[in-house]
Image (cartoon, helix red, strand yellow):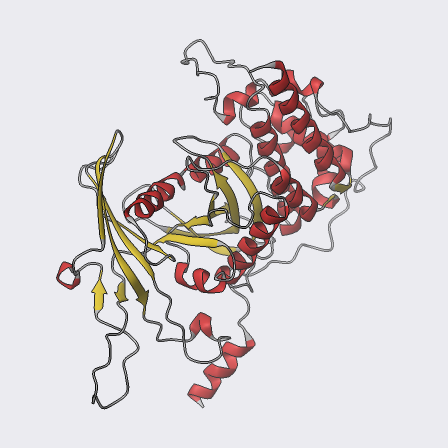
Length: 475
């Protein structure tokens, strides 16, 4: 990289570090140096107290625990700063956002509030489990091609009294609004593509976010049944006109008519990929449930159904077809190819989650309060963002038994190895620690007469509208 490009990247990194420090409104120096220790630690983070032994953390372990437990972070300021950074785009210039939930499992913390049952996949086939923890919804911008880098833009913890789809819709609306305010999207640009996995109610998200310049794409179960548009009404037909057309059962090929588009792509990883699409398919909404606050007749939400079948998978000899639903109607063959390729890029977010948990130590601390967990989560996001900004500046400090990486292809873990050498050249806003003595602590022999309360796990509240309607049905 030229000196001008390195100088610009170094300036962008220094600007983010200054904004991040300004967003720490209490115990700022201790929180900032704790983030520095995460970035400069040798190897994966195993415990918080080990981070205080690094040269970058100049304070004691008591100051660290006090900062994590009682510090303050302004998430809104960090969110605006993340949106103002250079945004990665797909190969054709589109902005592709991925949304997914990753749990912070706390099965052994009965005194921690606001825990939910988090869905976790077991080691064996069909061995899914529900383990108590804090689920976090992340939104990230995806890059083009196979990579382990993503640009995190937001994180929200899902509470026990909240509707996950409603929280995700508000989160995506806020993220898109900040991207537009930062100038990443303007009138006339392609619509922003949002991809999600099967855990989201993609049709409901498409209905709630219909006023935004976005397109929704999500995976649906292979046993779903969708409907075509209602057929034209013949003259002289009596009775109530139908609202839905013929059925399209994903697991019954006899219900599939001729597809609207079919494309074949030769790939190096999956072999031949065949994408087939049908236009104007919608789910039949029969129960109020999550639509309890919707007034009037339940809507008909049409989109494009895509069936993707590949020749092989890296670890499966008999791959099953993948079903996707897009909120766009009238999609062309090029649109269909872009949709399924963008959905495959969604799995890059899984690499970010693995980096968070296995290297940066996101779920390592035994934090009691959910507020402290939110605080630590934003520190990890800030650390990951600094690694992304330092990506063009880092050198490949590979081990003797590792293969060297070409320029521009360093993984986040390898960039972290060289961050200690880049740190002195960036902004260092934290002030030097003042000499002090540790507090006396609890007197020896005294007992804690106020034990911490225990909290139940799972949903703890229902919406008043749903309860009142349920009482009317049973009354």
